[in-house]
Image (cartoon, rainbow, N blue to C red; front, top):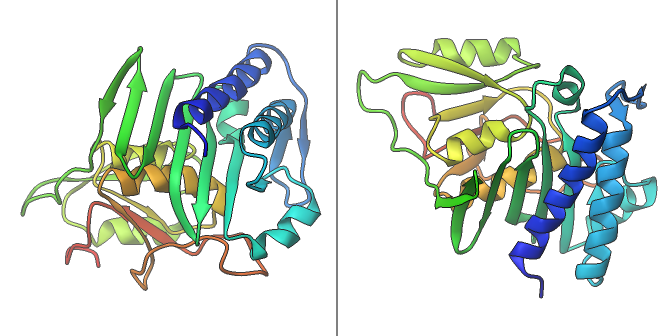
Length: 259
C-alpha cells in the first residue's frame, strides 16, 4: 500500500522538473491530435512513471504520454494510476502559471485518490477517503465545496482559459446572475472543491487524465462531477474505444437552477 505523502512528493518532483524547463527557452512540437507537446511534458512523464513503478510496482500506470499498448490494455485494469504529467500545456507555453501535475488512482471506474500540483503557483490539492486538502505557502488546510447559492445570489462560474464553447456560453445564460472566472488546467475543478466557485460546466472535449486527479479532490471535498445532461456520476475507463470524457458539470450538488 502506498503513502499519500509519497505520491504528493512525486508530483512535486515532477513539478520541479517542469519548472527547470519553464524558466528557459524550450522546443514545442505537435502531437497527432494537433495538441502541443514540450520537453517538460516528457520530463514530468518519466519522473512520475518511474516513481510509481518503484512505489507501487503492482499497480499499472496510464499517462497521457504513454505508448499505444497501455492505451489498449487499460480497459482490463480494475485499479491503475492515471496521470497527466503536464495539464495545461497551452498555459505552460503562455507562461501564465496555470498548469498542473495530475496523479489519480482509479479503482472500479472511480477516482478514489488524486493529487493536483501547480508548481508555478506553489499550490497543491489532494483528496481521498479522509477528506480534501490544500497546501499553500507551507500551510495545509482542509477544503470543502460551498453551499448552493441562495435565491438572488451571484453564481460563481468557472470557465476555461482557452476553450469556452458555445454550449458553455448558452449554459451560463440560463443561470441567475453570474460571475465567470477563467482558469486553466485542472485548477478549474479545484476552485469548486475549495469553495472558491460554485459550478464548472465543461461542455467541451476533455480526456480522462485531464480530470481524474481533480475529480478525486472534488469528491473528497463533498462535491460532484456529473455527466451532462444525464446528471449521472462521471466514471473512468468504461469505454474501450475512447479516453475522451463526455460533457460534465462540477458542482456541490444538483440545483433546479440548472439541472
